[in-house]
Length: 209
Image (cartoon, rainbow, N blue to C red; front, side, top):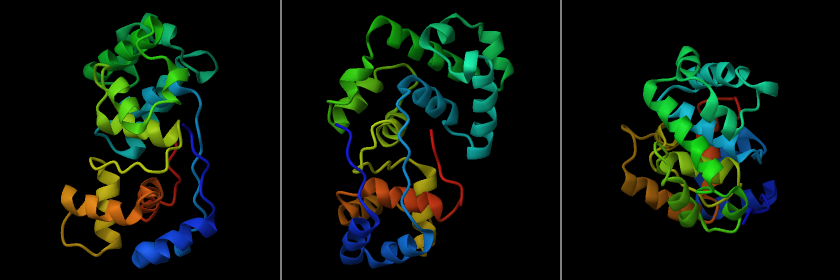
């Protein structure tokens, strides 16, 4: 289910008790803002485009990708029908073109039923989405955060989260999954909030999908 976002007071009360270092970051960075994009297909397209490239490169390619479609709003049918060459010409790799085509096909054939996802728990959503060619756990986790606004998501494979944790906790190297899980236990049930502030500590721009 989608969750109501916690208030600033709730967030600070939680982190001041569980993780004072993160609480100090939260006070400095300001209000937690997480937009919810109900266009599930577009969120997943954006997450696929963003795989393994910088935020700026992803934004640039995403803009060009969306410009190919009416009102910059690609539908599954349009993505399936559009030529591979047009998709390659906006900067997408051959692999990502395959991923986007498969995603469109899964929406069309009912493999992914958007309205069911709301009622699934996090692991069920991840299992559904990772059945799509090219969607891994990280992409599914971005969907949980930005489409379903789940508050308890800790994307262990996210480079931005790793870099943010390294900076916040003054580590010599990027944190291991074990260290990240230990932090996640402290942050629970607000892992998404901790992740969001770890992103903000490096980039003033608020990440959206």
